[in-house]
Image 1 (cartoon, rainbow over the protein chains, first blue to last red):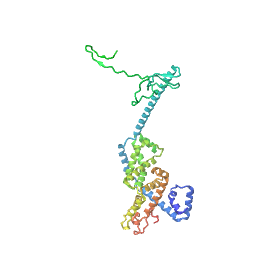
Image 2: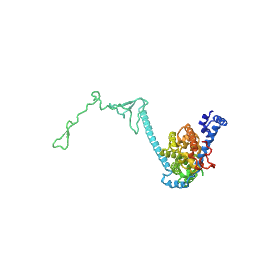
Image 3: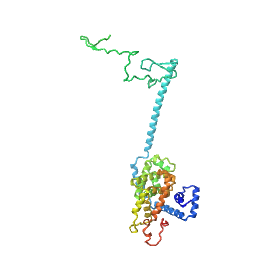
Image 4: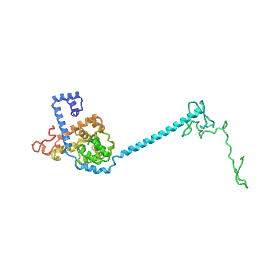
Length: 196
Length: 201
């Protein structure tokens, strides 16, 4: 180990932050190099100076009283406990919500299974699920509609877009004109023209 | 009563327990703050602020007999924030410029009244990050790993800072301005025992 190598790692050697092998090499070098040994002695004196500087001035006596005097202005030490209670209450509320939604789903599945069994299996006619054509929807076997507090939401055909062109013919019923009201003198109420 | 029991008493609202904690750790923390800040008044204020921060954070204390280390971390962080406010993080180039500006002849040197003033003067001329790392290593006897975690820098950087800090302190203490007036070459030949008397020029 050269002097440059040693002087680069001299602080690590002083502080014990060196492997045992490197430490042995440094100690061997120190035996034969008076310059490096002198530098090590100098840096040890620097450490003594720093220690002496830190211990030279005592902490003032008023420090404790000053800290205690300023304590009442600080928030109480138990404040984070309240935060913990708030967090626990929030978690309990979240758990109740999850349990309620889960229960609603479970109740819906159970009710759907009962409907399936009551109708004898096979294809299940779900009259409660409206479709765009007005006919009953046919639900495949093994899939039960969810009927619960959230209502029936078996996927139906998408609603026609308001931008789609009007479709006539087929099963589409032509809209009837709205009857007009006509006033007849001598009668107390209106008669609707065209009404039966 | 150990520190953890006193912390538990503080959390129950016993302020006297906190007074015991302050009395117990005040001297060591003040030495640490003084070593980093190199100003007695600021060190006292920093220790007060650190204790008040610790009081408000006591419920977050999860240690098992590590209250001194916990307090030390709070104090070091506070001292570093103070140093940042003072813009005292000087690079080596800045330090060299500062030293060149302060290099005066023997007649212009400020008279250093005591040995400790000379050491403090040299410490005060160190870059703050070198000084902080040196104090944490030499005074608090922390390992490089602990210092690196506290200052959030790699261990190799801490080794470099400590080494350069020692070399710079050696250089500063060897300057004539760092020595007491009665120890200057033109003064009396009476030898005076100083901690840095053995430094080679």
